[in-house]
Image (tube, rainbow over all chains, first blue to last red; front, side, top):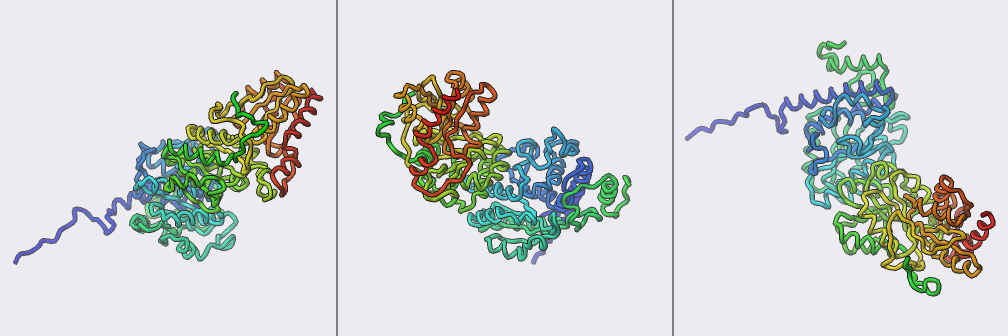
Length: 300
Length: 321
C-alpha cells in the first residue's frame, strides 16, 4: 500500500484559472479608467458621464483579460474586435485604449477639442484601436455583426464583442441586427447590453419599456447570460461561458449602476449627458482615489 | 468614340440591371473578397446570378436596409468588398444615416447598388420611383456616385469600382433601355465621354437620357443645329474639365436626367459652370413633384424625359445664348 501525496498549487488559483492578483489588477485598471473619465469630461466641458463610469469594469475586464489584443499592433489580423455602439460613452473607450497603451495618456485631455483624434463621437481611422465610427444609435451593432460574419466566412477563430446601451434598444435597427445575428448563429459574437435603466428622458421602463428583455433576447435565438456589471470575477465567468457556447450567439445582459464609483452620480438619469464641473470633479476624484473612502486619499 | 451600330434605328434593348448582375459576377471571379448582400430582392436586383455562382459569399439580410448598410461596413472593415443591393427608394432612401456614418464617414469600401431607380419603374407608382437618390448621395463626403447609361456601362462600372478602395453609389433602372455602347467602348469612372461633337449647344445627360440626347441631336442636325452630346456617367467626382470646355466652346448647356431637377446632375453641372464659366442652362428633369403610376414610356413622355423634351430645351436655351 502506498500513499499518494496531494498536489499543492504553486500559487492561489481559483476555479476560473484567474489569480486574485489578476482580479485586483483589473479592478485597479477600472479605477484608473474612471479617474481618466472624470478628468477628460471636466476638461472637455461636455460629454456623457453616467454610462462611461458605469461600464468601466466591463471595459477593464475585456481589454485587460478577455480580449486578444495588442496595443502595439492595433491592426493585428488575429485580434478580437470590440465595437462600441452606444458611442456617446466613448470617454470610457478612449480611457481604456490609452491605459492599454494604444496611444499616449496625455492625449486624453484633448477630448472634444479642435484638431483632436478623440472626437466627441468616435471616428474610425483617426485613433489606433477604434474599430468603428459611431454616434447615431444602433449602427455599431450592425457593423459588429458584419465583422463576425466576415470571420465566419473566412473560418477565423477570433471573436467580436459589441456593447449597446439599453435605451439604444428603442431603435428598430437593433432588432434587425439581432434577427440577423440569431439567424446566422454567429457564435463568435458576444453582445453586451449596458442595462443601466436610464436614458436621456428618464428611466427606460417609463420612456419605452424593454421588459421582459431576457425573454425577448432568448426568443431572438441568443444564449442569454444575466450578470452583474461590476464584479470582475462574475464578468470573467460570463465572458468565458460565452466563449464555450458554439451553437448560438451570446448576450451578456449586464446590470450596471449608471455613474458607478462616484456616489453623487450613481442611479441619477440627469448625469446621462453632462460632465462634472470643477468642484464636482474634485469630489469625484477624491472618492475614486480613496477607493470609496476605504483608504486615505493623499490628493484630497 | 465607338458606339453601337444602328442605335438610332433599331437599338438592342437590355435592362441596365443585367449589367450589374453580370458585372458583379465577373468582379467576383477576379476577387474572392467580393461579397453580395441583398434585402429580399435578389432576383429583381439581379444579385441572383452571383448568389447562384457563389452561395457562400452571398448574404441575405431580409427586408432590413439599415442593417444591410451596417453589416456591409463591418464586412468591409474585415477586408471584404461588399456590394449591397436593393431598390434605390429603400437604399439609399431608408438607410441614409447608416450610409453617412457607418460607410462614408468611416471610408468603408462598400458598393451601394440602387436598382429600379427613376420614374421608368412605372406602374408601382411614386413611392417606388427613386427621383431623389442622386441628390442625397451626392452631398455625402467620400462617396462616388455613378449613373450608367446602358447594359455595358453598368457592367463596366460594377467591375471597375471593385478596384477603387472607396465607397460607391450606383443607380440603375428596371426596364429595357437601348444599348448605346459596345463591349469595347472605352469607359473610365470619373471621365465624362463625348458621344457626339457639336458647336452650338451641349446636352449633358446621364442614365437612360443619354440615348434620348443622341436621338435629339440627330433630329436637330436636320434643322441645322449642331449639338454636342456628353455622357456624364460619374456624377461625383464630376468631370469639371469636360463641362467647362463644353461651356466655353458651345456657350449653352442642357442637362438631362431621370431625377428631380434639384440636386441631381443638372445641379452638379450648374455648380461647376457658375464657378468657372457661367452660360445659360436648361434642365430636363422631374420638376419638383412626385411621380405616378403608368407604363414607363407613358411616364417618360408625360414628364418630358424624352428626345422631344430635350429638343424643346435646346431651342429654349439657344434663345438665351
